[in-house]
Image 1: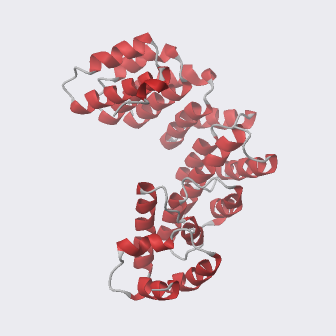
Image 2: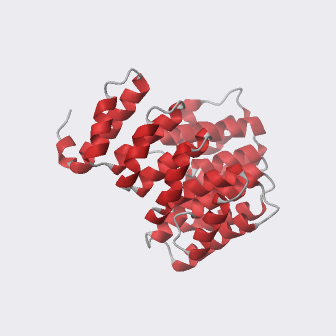
Image 3: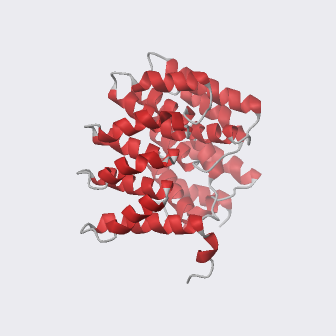
Length: 306
């Protein structure tokens, strides 16, 4: 079956044939043209299903690449397809995607799509901080995320995700935005401020992050624990140890993971103790954290393990 026939089948068959979807990987120029012409005519629920299945396939098989399909999905008429297409591009780090993502963040009518665009742009903030992105592109990403944060009529979730995305950027205005969000009376913005503090990897935030480890809101405690792991400061270890018995399972998991990120004798001893926990999830998390620490200390020790 040639590609034209396959596209006809994809749009008209009674069900999506999952085994044939890899044909959409690495489309040639001519195939891309045929795909672009046929895609809008496929029924919307079917388009959603295809994008979802392609995302799963790409996660399970690194040899499959559906970026061309996902790129077309960015301009789909359906918001659910646009959201899923951005998520499908989660590993795409070439700068040619920056302008489309910025347009989406600025003007897409669906807040959920704008949220996904903000999150995706966070990759390019990290690349900029690592000097792996041109100065021009870095400035464009920074400006777009700043616009989203400062738009007073923007949805809170979009502003929050934009703040998280730009958190790694070492600029005075970013630190000011984080501080403002932290002091905000909007709970969602405080959560994102704590997340951004961890993403910054700046030890200056540790006192504020540590304070939130005892917040009554489990979501804030979770973000604070994750942030402590990112900051990597051993001063946080005693507070994290207290969180390994938190009533919220996700908070416990985050605290255990953070201990593994920070490392050191005190953290290792605490993790070793947790191997005797009555909770299977706690034991598993502690094992994973200790394995990560062992690998960090001696990567070659894993080389010949079966």
